[in-house]
Length: 286
Length: 333
Figure (spheres, rainbow over the protein chains, first blue to last red):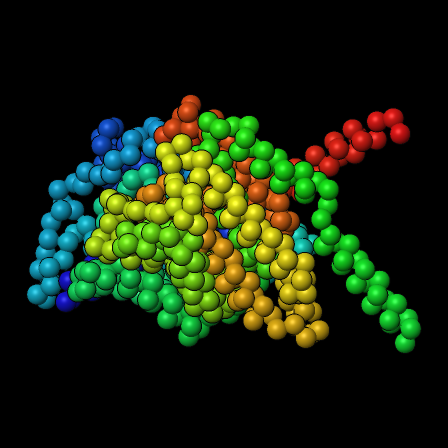
């Protein structure tokens, strides 16, 4: 029972890392980016190649996966996404679905369609008994990393100059520009960091989520649920939504395997009927 | 008083003019019918184009006219296909009856989910429609006794259309049946679009607040439009099941919903022929590309989507018109 809870928390934490970038770009910048999972996949594959083929230690591969995905995000943002910020949602949907399809086909073409596994170092495969609960070192690492990321994100957003500039740029880009804030630079950096975090999540979560070329399609709905259920008022909303989702999904698959996959949809529909603007929302999008 | 009456009369006359058949429309349908005679070896492709066009037409009603952003329209298509398929495996051989059942089932699902879709913003709609499609896919996957699961539904036995036209291997009946269904449904949709109901939908899309303030029941209109769109998608799904005699989970897969969006966008959102023209272009393109790279065909779909958006849909739509004007202008009068 506690083990299920623990696994659920780890799963939810990974979902948070994956989706928090989207919470900012989609929730705050109002850009419908369905291709967010493609960056996560990029990070996951980068880590898999580095660890399995080049022998890079797993812990060193994580920040590299982050950098790779962030760089990819930065390039794509400058080249492509910058042109679609002001477009209607339909255009953004079409555009990002197009990117997803290209990413899926490209990875399938270069890496093959089979599932990828990242070889974990021995110390991450250990299991401990803590207060009668069997705890895997790998999941413990996930929880530690994700908690650290969540905390620092929250601190950056609320206490640093960059955070306040980002909030200003999101609230009213025109006025922010008038005050001398370089809005497009801020958006680019935010997008890159969000993509990088997705990449980190993809590398970190490859083991529990499964990594194959259809990754962006499979988890698109999860990301959207995190963002819509969590609302966009704070990082905390997305964080709690990820935890609820992760625990519901793991518990659902564990206790009622026949209907396990429906658990998250039940949660989603319930929340939407109860609070259409998300659990912790001000307004989901403007 | 007479001023108001004159304005009303002028408005009525304009609406009347807009709803009249344009000569080009006769040409379009004549060409569609002629395709049956000209390309007897491509019956299956013609049938495929017709049912894709019908599917895109239903999406146009939801997206183009009512302005509901959806990523799960494939759910209704797949449901229609499964209902028609299951009916045919259980001894209900008449294709029209199977189609009616499929249409009713899809309409029911559409009406039920429209309550969810109406809530919230574009983003919530995306998620809910995506979620409904995912749930349906999961249900079909978990009920192998009924749907055949991952193997697909086999052993369909579809009787002759109207008791007269048996389905043949060359797909001649399939093509005639699909085209005829497309035309019949098109007439209905055309009527809907040009009715006061259709105009109220456009008003809601343009500005929901203002539409509500002149007395349009926004939510009710949207959910009716969504339900009609779902019902038509169900018909398109039934056509797929009956003409190919096979239904698989592929009918419910996400790429169905994405493909039909692309089809509609190629042809142009918000006018009746957008889906139909898009279906012709899309299927011909797919036919050509799939012979070159069958496995990575999705890459090219993606590329087309990205290019479409970056170039701009309005600009692309403006090119043929500008070209037409130049050609028409240069002709000696």
